[in-house]
Image (cartoon, rainbow, N blue to C red; front, side, top):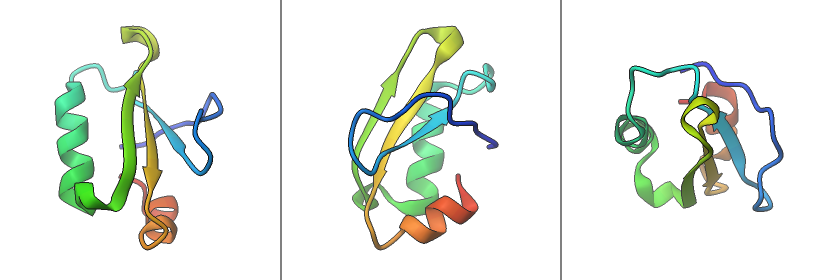
Length: 74
């Protein structure tokens, strides 16, 4: 999934993933993909925010996966 950051995250150290450009994938499928790659235990918090046409996921990754998360994404 290719993403663009277009808004500042609300939490310090959090990252935003723009999921509005992937309309054929549900919010749950996005969360499953994140959990499958990194495991849910590696995030302090995950929030899905925005309207359907401006949807994004706010993630706060654990420091142990931060480098991989930033370099490889989802």
